[in-house]
Image (tube, rainbow, N blue to C red; front, top):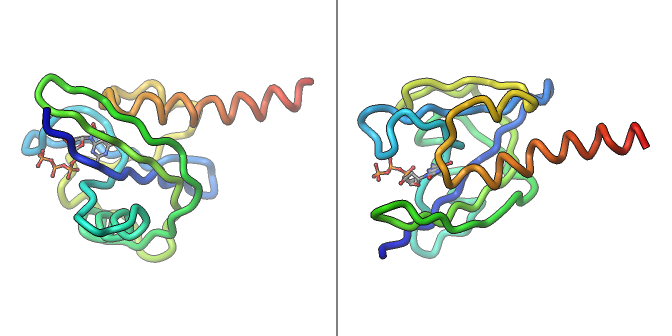
Length: 139
Ligand SMILES: Nc1nc2c([nH]c(=O)n2[C@H]2C[C@H](O)[C@@H](COP(=O)(O)OP(=O)(O)OP(=O)(O)O)O2)c(=O)[nH]1
C-alpha cells in the first residue's frame, strides 16, 4: 500500500489554544479536523516542510518547537505517516486558503472535534500533558 509522509503543526497560542483545521469537501478526508501541514518533499527536513506548508496553506510564518509523535495510520487505500511538532506563529495571522475553516480551540476541548484517525495519538498526548500537569499539582 502506498505511504505518504506528512508533517502536522500543533500551533499553540499564549492562551493554550490549539489551531484546528477542518478539511474541505475538495480535499481527501472531507469533514475531518486535522493539524495544518502536508506532505514532506524529497530531501526536505521536517521543520522546513512544516514552515513551507504553513506559509502556503495559512499564509503565515511559524517557528517549529518540540517533536510530539511519529505514527503510521492505515486508511483503507493509503498509509499515512504523520509526524507532529509543536509550533507557534511568529509573523502574520492564519488564513484558511484550502481548509473549510480554522478554529482556535482550548486544549481541554480538542477531543470534542471529529479528528482524522491518524491524529488521535497526537490528541492523546496533548490532552495527557495537561492532565499530567494537573496531577502533579494535586500530588
Ligand atoms: N496535513 C495533514 N494531513 C493529515 C492529517 N491527518 C491525516 O490523516 N492526514 C492525511 C490527509 C492526506 O491524505 C494527507 C495529507 O496530505 P496533504 O495535506 O498534502 O493533503 P492534500 O489535500 O494534498 O491531499 P490529497 O487531497 O492530495 O490526497 O495526510 C493531519 O493532521 N494533517
